[in-house]
Length: 175
Image (cartoon, rainbow, N blue to C red; front, side, top):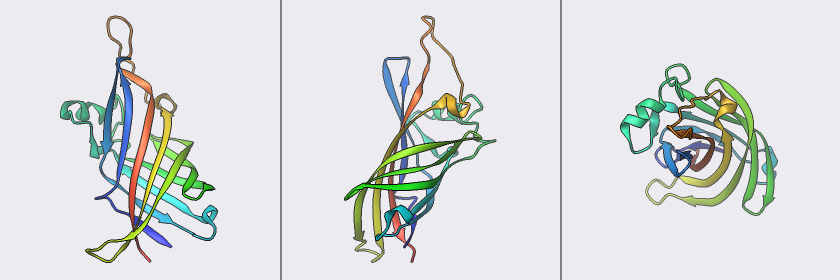
């Protein structure tokens, strides 16, 4: 079965430590892609997703502009973050580990997404079938050549290195 990620009901959120004392959260609102599912053999399913860097929103427009620069995402040079699954492992009734290649800032590394399948339902307005997923992973931004390292007077980094990523995905049956 083919599913199209619904950009209006999907989000990629992240959290990073700020000055070693607080967590700053943000999101990317332009998430698209396809999910191919095989309900009888989930390991034969696949995911391809794309996140547009310019859709970043941390609630602080000035910070968002800075995050789009070469100090961080370099959105002009690397406009998209992509994920292509390479393996799906079924853990139990609604939990999966989706392994795949995450490409960010011109670098690709394999990551594992701890994924929860939230189920399927029919949209009462359009009659379209939809599925919902939630996935979580962590990355070190330095692994993706994002090495911005400004510190305060005490030597504490402005931005932490570990990034928690949480994806909320709703997809529409495409046939």
